[in-house]
Image 1 (cartoon, helix red, strand yellow):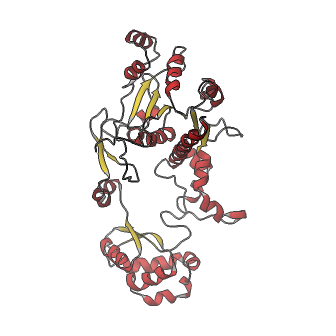
Image 2: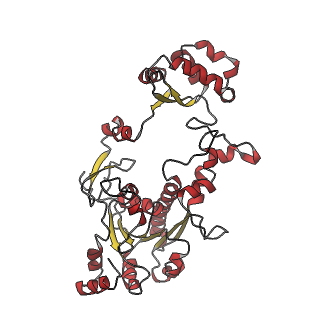
Image 3: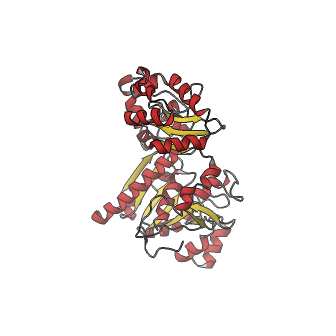
Length: 398
């Protein structure tokens, strides 16, 4: 894909003190929209997500996913000589994003009140586990811990045990809310000329996504039961085995679809009148009996035959894909959703960002090597080669 001549955030500079997933995921969205994102990393070590695994030709899967199109600057923020470098960066920045350990940014003088006095137009976005204030302010927070605190684990899994999400949903939620708040702060600054402070917590982000189970359990009512891959409160809606050892996913939403399902998929139109299954609530109550009837019919069919019946009846359905199936998904291929990005290990496939605009194309730049852009960034800030060499010898930069 060729670069778009103009993107929504072209000319916006973001400085990010980031690690793990939440902040890097946020800033990668900003980079997709054209922002210049300068990622500050510890000399010699970098973002600790670089070491999570080596699954992508020696690179970490999390890091490749969340760090394309960024510039990597190695800088030891605790070193006394790092201050002037960071100050020159912030003089040119529009946004500072940080998800350091609780209290670390303030100890470095990077809290909003301190920065706003010197850089009144700077937007500061703080991402943390629990947000500022309250008894949990200083607790460490990782994705799985927030899934636990936010109630997600209580409604996910099966009768025997709870289960975590297979991806970092608390980090993703916080990253996306930080991203949308930064966009709104940039719009607000156009009216006021002033930067603002954004405080995003992983807990509040995930709890917002828990709105349905929260209201389902309103005023002490029983929460949705853990039901594996099936929907907890709508039935039939979930996975069903087929005669060839396959599995199909299907979902019914209303009584019209229930009648079609009985007639055209199960071939048992009389089942629609069975009093045990006369409403969704009754079908949920008698799900074991209904599941047995469905599986009996599906046992004589292979997965593609079942999917064909569901399609002809207009019943929503899906394949149960593994990761290899997603890489090869025909819909993604047909819509040309894969492109190629650079990396320290050579070209890699990458999914284009969700949403297609007819006005601009997303930036799909390389995943940076640790400190790859240090000299170029410092040179652009006016630090000559001798000064950069001195900083390197002192361990300020890598």
